[in-house]
Length: 254
Image 1 (cartoon, rainbow, N blue to C red):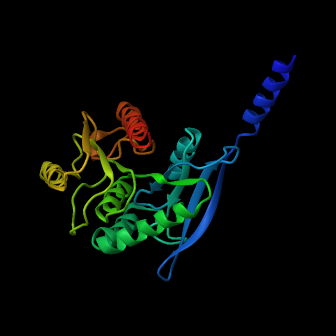
Image 2: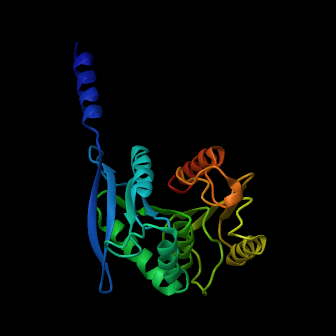
C-alpha cells in the first residue's frame, strides 16, 4: 500500500499547485513602474523565466492571461510596465500617443524594458542564464529593442511587432524570433527587408516567420476578424505562433 500513499502525496502536491499573480513596483530613474509577477507557487527551485511586454494600451488583462499561460508551462514570468504606474490608455488615440513617446525615443524604451529585466532577475525563481522576452504589437517592438540594447539574455520573441530599428544598437547577444502577419499593413515590405538585412549584418541566430492571411494583432482575441481593418485576430496564426514560441524556448533553454 506504500505506492498508494505516495500517489496520494503526489496528487496533493498537484492540487496545491496554483498560478499566482502579484503586482510589483519598481523604478526606472525617478519613474515608478508597476509590473506583474506570475508564477506557480508550488514549483521549487530556479527555472526558465520570461519577460512579457504589453501592447499599446499598457499592462492589462491580455498580458496577464498570456503570463498565466506561460506560468502553466512552467515558466517564471514578469509582465513589465513600460508606461508607468497607473498609465493605462483606454482608447486608441491615447494609446497611440503614449506608444509614440517610446517609439520616437528608443533610448528611453530600452531603459524602461531593461528596468523590467533587472526586476525579473531579482525574483527568487529566476534562472539568470535562462531568460527570454516576448511582446505583442508595441511589446514586440520593445522585445526587439531589448535585444538591440545588447541585453545578455537567451532570446526574444516578437508577435506582430514593428520590425524597424530607429536607433543604432549594440551587438546582439539574444537569439531572435519574429512572428509576423504576412499581410500586416503597418509593417510594410521595406521594413521587413530592412529587418532581415539588420539581422544578417548582426550575424545573430534569427528567424522570421510570416503567417499567410494574417494582419496586425493576429494573436489578440479582442481584435475582431475583419482583415480589411488592418488588425484582426487569426486563430490559426495565433496557435501556430504560440507553438513556434514554445519550440524556440525548447531550443534556447535546453
